[in-house]
Image 1: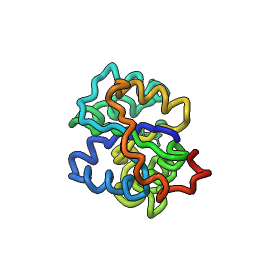
Image 2: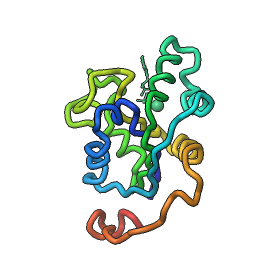
Image 3: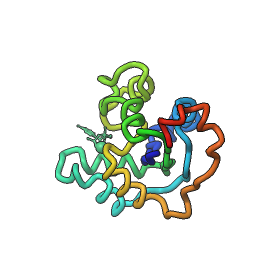
Image 4: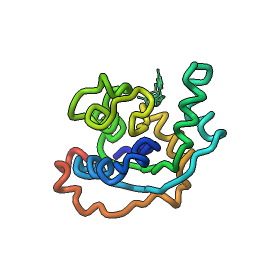
Length: 154
Ligand code: IDP
Ligand code: MG
Protein backbone atom coordinates (compact mmCIF):
# COMPACT_ATOMS: atom_id res chain seq x y z
CA UNK A 1 0.00 0.00 0.00
CA UNK A 2 1.14 3.53 -0.77
CA UNK A 3 0.05 6.84 0.66
CA UNK A 4 0.01 10.11 -1.24
CA UNK A 5 -0.81 13.74 -0.53
CA UNK A 6 -3.68 15.46 -2.30
CA UNK A 7 -4.60 19.10 -1.76
CA UNK A 8 -7.97 20.41 -2.88
CA UNK A 9 -6.84 23.86 -3.93
CA UNK A 10 -8.66 27.14 -3.23
CA UNK A 11 -10.13 26.98 -6.73
CA UNK A 12 -11.96 23.81 -5.62
CA UNK A 13 -13.08 25.35 -2.35
CA UNK A 14 -14.26 28.58 -4.01
CA UNK A 15 -16.19 26.71 -6.69
CA UNK A 16 -17.89 24.45 -4.14
CA UNK A 17 -16.40 21.33 -5.70
CA UNK A 18 -14.94 19.80 -2.53
CA UNK A 19 -17.51 17.04 -2.27
CA UNK A 20 -17.43 16.27 -5.96
CA UNK A 21 -13.64 15.88 -6.08
CA UNK A 22 -13.45 13.84 -2.90
CA UNK A 23 -16.14 11.63 -4.36
CA UNK A 24 -14.04 10.96 -7.49
CA UNK A 25 -11.18 9.65 -5.36
CA UNK A 26 -13.48 7.67 -3.09
CA UNK A 27 -15.32 6.02 -5.96
CA UNK A 28 -12.03 5.01 -7.54
CA UNK A 29 -11.33 2.94 -4.43
CA UNK A 30 -8.71 5.10 -2.73
CA UNK A 31 -9.05 5.19 1.04
CA UNK A 32 -8.90 8.43 2.96
CA UNK A 33 -6.29 7.91 5.66
CA UNK A 34 -6.36 11.55 6.79
CA UNK A 35 -8.15 14.75 5.91
CA UNK A 36 -8.32 18.32 7.19
CA UNK A 37 -8.95 21.88 6.17
CA UNK A 38 -6.05 24.26 6.63
CA UNK A 39 -4.88 27.75 5.73
CA UNK A 40 -1.52 27.58 3.95
CA UNK A 41 1.26 30.04 4.76
CA UNK A 42 4.00 31.76 2.80
CA UNK A 43 6.67 29.62 4.49
CA UNK A 44 4.91 26.32 3.86
CA UNK A 45 4.37 27.20 0.20
CA UNK A 46 8.03 28.16 -0.25
CA UNK A 47 8.84 24.57 0.75
CA UNK A 48 5.96 22.90 -1.05
CA UNK A 49 6.66 24.65 -4.36
CA UNK A 50 10.43 25.04 -3.95
CA UNK A 51 10.96 23.46 -7.40
CA UNK A 52 9.17 26.47 -8.90
CA UNK A 53 11.03 29.20 -7.00
CA UNK A 54 12.11 31.87 -9.47
CA UNK A 55 9.40 31.12 -12.03
CA UNK A 56 7.55 34.27 -13.09
CA UNK A 57 4.23 32.84 -11.93
CA UNK A 58 5.53 31.82 -8.47
CA UNK A 59 4.14 34.83 -6.50
CA UNK A 60 0.74 34.51 -8.18
CA UNK A 61 0.71 30.77 -7.55
CA UNK A 62 1.43 31.30 -3.85
CA UNK A 63 -1.23 33.99 -3.57
CA UNK A 64 -3.77 31.71 -5.23
CA UNK A 65 -2.93 28.90 -2.81
CA UNK A 66 -3.56 31.19 0.18
CA UNK A 67 -6.82 32.68 -1.06
CA UNK A 68 -8.94 30.28 1.01
CA UNK A 69 -8.11 27.28 3.16
CA UNK A 70 -7.33 24.07 1.29
CA UNK A 71 -8.45 20.54 2.07
CA UNK A 72 -5.44 18.29 2.63
CA UNK A 73 -5.96 14.56 2.17
CA UNK A 74 -3.85 11.48 2.55
CA UNK A 75 -5.08 8.88 0.08
CA UNK A 76 -4.07 5.25 0.34
CA UNK A 77 -4.06 2.33 -2.07
CA UNK A 78 -1.92 0.00 -4.15
CA UNK A 79 0.21 2.25 -6.42
CA UNK A 80 -1.74 5.21 -5.00
CA UNK A 81 0.87 7.81 -6.00
CA UNK A 82 0.80 6.96 -9.72
CA UNK A 83 -2.94 6.26 -9.74
CA UNK A 84 -3.76 9.63 -8.21
CA UNK A 85 -1.47 11.46 -10.65
CA UNK A 86 -3.09 9.59 -13.53
CA UNK A 87 -6.64 10.46 -12.58
CA UNK A 88 -5.61 14.03 -11.72
CA UNK A 89 -4.37 14.60 -15.25
CA UNK A 90 -2.01 17.00 -16.97
CA UNK A 91 -1.14 20.23 -15.13
CA UNK A 92 -2.91 22.58 -17.54
CA UNK A 93 -6.65 21.96 -17.38
CA UNK A 94 -7.07 23.08 -20.97
CA UNK A 95 -4.78 20.28 -22.12
CA UNK A 96 -5.74 17.61 -19.60
CA UNK A 97 -7.62 14.61 -20.97
CA UNK A 98 -11.38 14.46 -20.49
CA UNK A 99 -12.11 11.96 -17.75
CA UNK A 100 -9.27 13.25 -15.59
CA UNK A 101 -10.15 15.59 -12.72
CA UNK A 102 -8.32 18.55 -14.24
CA UNK A 103 -9.68 17.69 -17.69
CA UNK A 104 -13.23 17.64 -16.39
CA UNK A 105 -13.24 20.51 -13.88
CA UNK A 106 -10.91 23.31 -14.93
CA UNK A 107 -9.74 25.61 -17.69
CA UNK A 108 -6.53 26.84 -16.05
CA UNK A 109 -2.85 26.05 -15.78
CA UNK A 110 -2.73 27.54 -12.28
CA UNK A 111 -6.25 27.16 -10.87
CA UNK A 112 -6.14 23.45 -11.50
CA UNK A 113 -8.24 22.00 -8.68
CA UNK A 114 -5.82 19.58 -7.03
CA UNK A 115 -2.24 19.01 -6.04
CA UNK A 116 -0.98 15.43 -6.03
CA UNK A 117 2.45 14.11 -4.99
CA UNK A 118 4.46 13.13 -8.05
CA UNK A 119 6.78 10.40 -6.71
CA UNK A 120 7.19 8.11 -3.68
CA UNK A 121 9.95 10.38 -2.38
CA UNK A 122 7.77 13.48 -2.73
CA UNK A 123 4.81 11.73 -1.10
CA UNK A 124 6.82 10.96 2.05
CA UNK A 125 8.14 14.52 2.35
CA UNK A 126 4.80 16.15 1.53
CA UNK A 127 2.74 13.97 3.88
CA UNK A 128 5.14 14.84 6.70
CA UNK A 129 4.78 18.53 5.81
CA UNK A 130 0.99 18.47 6.04
CA UNK A 131 0.14 15.76 8.60
CA UNK A 132 1.39 14.69 11.99
CA UNK A 133 1.65 10.88 12.28
CA UNK A 134 -1.32 10.73 14.65
CA UNK A 135 -3.50 12.50 12.07
CA UNK A 136 -3.25 9.53 9.69
CA UNK A 137 -5.47 6.59 10.48
CA UNK A 138 -4.90 2.91 9.88
CA UNK A 139 -8.53 2.03 9.80
CA UNK A 140 -11.18 0.28 7.87
CA UNK A 141 -9.41 -2.35 5.80
CA UNK A 142 -12.92 -3.72 5.48
CA UNK A 143 -13.19 -3.64 1.72
CA UNK A 144 -9.74 -4.72 0.65
CA UNK A 145 -10.98 -8.07 -0.61
CA UNK A 146 -13.48 -6.26 -2.81
CA UNK A 147 -11.06 -3.60 -4.04
CA UNK A 148 -8.16 -5.92 -4.85
CA UNK A 149 -7.18 -9.51 -5.45
CA UNK A 150 -5.32 -10.79 -2.39
CA UNK A 151 -1.99 -10.98 -4.23
CA UNK A 152 -2.28 -7.32 -5.19
CA UNK A 153 -2.19 -5.89 -1.72
CA UNK A 154 -0.55 -8.47 0.56
P1 IDP B 1 1.68 19.59 -10.98
O1 IDP B 1 0.73 20.28 -10.02
O2 IDP B 1 0.94 19.00 -12.16
O3 IDP B 1 2.60 18.60 -10.33
P2 IDP B 1 3.95 21.44 -11.13
O4 IDP B 1 4.82 21.63 -12.33
O5 IDP B 1 4.53 20.74 -9.94
O6 IDP B 1 2.60 20.74 -11.63
O7 IDP B 1 3.44 22.88 -10.70
C1 IDP B 1 2.80 23.06 -9.47
C2 IDP B 1 1.63 24.01 -9.66
O8 IDP B 1 2.11 25.27 -10.13
C3 IDP B 1 0.63 23.57 -10.74
O9 IDP B 1 -0.31 22.63 -10.27
C4 IDP B 1 -0.01 24.89 -11.11
O10 IDP B 1 -0.99 25.28 -10.15
C5 IDP B 1 1.18 25.83 -11.02
N1 IDP B 1 1.82 26.02 -12.32
C6 IDP B 1 2.68 25.17 -12.94
N2 IDP B 1 3.09 25.68 -14.13
C7 IDP B 1 2.47 26.87 -14.25
C8 IDP B 1 2.48 27.89 -15.27
O11 IDP B 1 3.16 27.79 -16.30
N3 IDP B 1 1.70 28.98 -15.02
C9 IDP B 1 0.94 29.14 -13.91
N4 IDP B 1 0.91 28.22 -12.93
C10 IDP B 1 1.65 27.10 -13.10
MG1 MG C 1 4.10 18.98 -8.91
